[in-house]
Image (cartoon, rainbow, N blue to C red; front, side, top):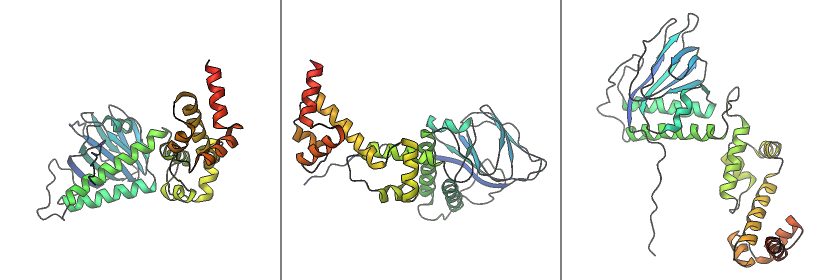
Length: 290
């Protein structure tokens, strides 16, 4: 048997990194206005930071992050009553999807902060100190750990992809640690829309979306008005209706396309959902069209 290899699409690419610092700024510290041809991620681990840029002017609080666009003018200022700890990562990324994070701070949840910590730790495997002093040319370690540069690249790309996925569903940001569960429900809906023809269990969804069965079922029903089973059943029913009304496929073929075990099971399912058999629905749809 000859297998056919499939190419994998690349959405986010980080090929170059300018710097990766963990600063402990003093009170009243400030920088001059700067611009450079790469993006700059700023995350506040503690304290408060004032940010001024072409896209945003305001404060960054604990656990908040912003990403300056390439070539955007920006500077930062520490207040008189705060000595913040700050992560700054300069990197090259040509995707405009991360521009979302340039005009508003986002509150990172616990999982995102853990990923950011992994990036910083891997950066220590790539770059030589100092890490707490501004520099225009961070030196790489001569005997870096095997694969450290690729690992750093992958971790940063993974972090950015997760952020884009999260905020692509809902632009509102919840308070406190972790993502608002409404974002997770939107992710689950998207997952079900993509995989509704496969066998999906509640336990699988609870594991994939980092929650428990009870919370998953309760929140899903509150946000969608349906149980997960009802949502999947309605999805299958609507697809079946479209195929019965518009395609030339037989009922048996449609049952197979929707991955029902048999035409009899499909018929029972469809009648329970609509009150009529697939054949009667097809006849009714064709009569209405005429």
